[in-house]
Amino acid sequence: MTQILDGKKVAADLRESIKAFIQKKQISPHLVVFLTHSNPASSIYVKNKLTACAEVGMRTTLIEQPASSEAELTKLLASYATNKDVDGILIQLPLHQNIDTKYVLQQIPPEKDVDGLHPINLGKLVQADPSGFIPCTPLGICTLLDAYKIPIRGKHVVIIGRSITVGKPLALLLSQKGKDATVTLAHTATEHLEELCSSADIIVAAAGTPNLITPPMVKKTTTIIDVGINRVEGKIVGDVDPSVYQLCAAISPVPGGVGPMTIASLLQNTLKGYLAYH
Image 1 (cartoon, rainbow, N blue to C red):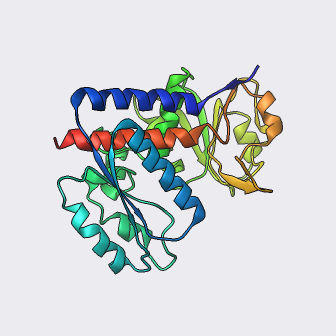
Image 2 (cartoon, rainbow, N blue to C red):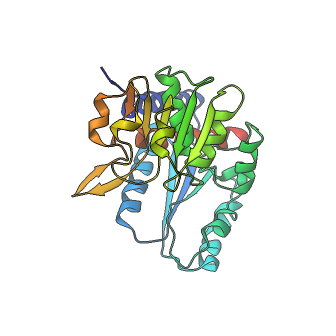
Image 3 (cartoon, rainbow, N blue to C red):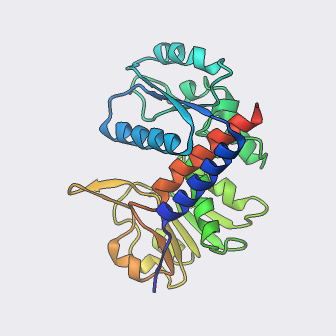
């Protein structure tokens, strides 16, 4: 029988441990969230993040103000970037189409970049330097795998999706010493993808393509991490065809798998930012 990797449960346990630590130490980390582009999905994501922070005892400030240029957004950021009372800064993506996202992310001080997307933090990930922030979704995926004691060392992991928020950092994270996976980073243009996946011990589907993972790609011993968030006929679905659920060893569902872990990892990173400078 397929094991369901319940991200809701693991995330709830992680939030409880963070809450207990905050209460014991009598601290109150402060996260500032920028929502600068009108997007219904972004508004929901931000609301969920703010709610999670409140539940564990973290302070939040929401800057909800339209910005359509790098100059506008950089000006908004400036005072929070230098404020010692701010432990983490998060800019909800996507930004306005006129804004250079890479440039704006570089304006966040690396020590407050709780999304882990500043070049310095990504560079620290390359060097396996634990002082940097790890992007929230890859961190959450590793926490979920560890919670269910899914073997990683020496295993072949196929990651489909090469984004800077998931695929690339996750490939680095899983191939580090200590994790010791053999990682193949694939994408929707990869040739012979079915054959490649059929050799995998773990498949991470993060391409944003519904029904990308089909039965011929999966072994009975395969663990699948579904990162896809797609809206199909009014429903949120992942990248994995529903028929695959009964064919693999373990799978993280959509919704209720990686999503809650991403938010719990944001809380981890915000606490880490606080502890580094207090």
